[in-house]
Length: 261
Image 1 (cartoon, rainbow, N blue to C red):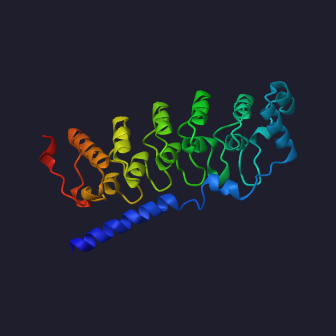
Image 2: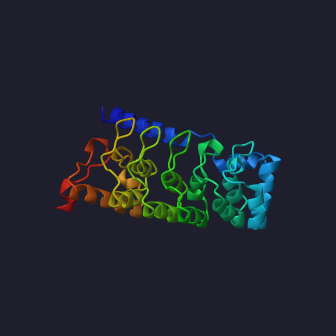
Image 3: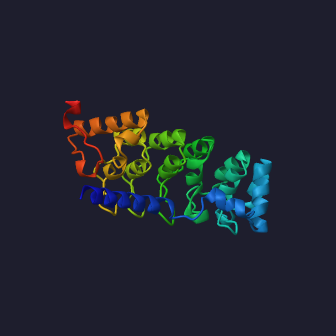
């Protein structure tokens, strides 16, 4: 009976992971490598002017409320996504100054804010946040948030930046997963602890009616490295301090309630 119980829990865990990682067939960066994005001539003129750093030349191409700033390539890439992908910081800054919307959905529904959250260089997210970009923008197709991208891509700097920018930790994606659920799914106890201290709701339930504990406590303690075990104990200590029950029925190992008092 115990073995069957464990198999069912493992199946639930794997289904949750599949829902997280298979909602998009390719990452935006992978998709962009398949073909060079093609913009129309008018949009290319805007990009060329932005690359040159010539504000006056760019202004001449963009009358007030110009729809050109919302142009997309044939792949769905936005102007800002192109500037980030091509590492064109001058163009990126000028497009923002001209009024390009960083919350515009692009390839696979992602915005440039999502791209910046997963990028190897945190400067792009810093530029966006300094220009009042929202840390809570959703993927137009899946509802995923920039925090999810930072967690999945192991971008700790961007993760901290988004929380410092007052990202709403209560928001969830299309299947009800909050940032805390994602940290649990990825077995990142220290990130989960950081989220809890920042105000993430520990009792939030996803579409499967599960809290983050279901996923964070799935792996046996003996399979974790020391840092992960210490992170897990910090979570348990936090939950005890808030009088939140440990979900013993989903944990593969017994957690002693008396460990912290």
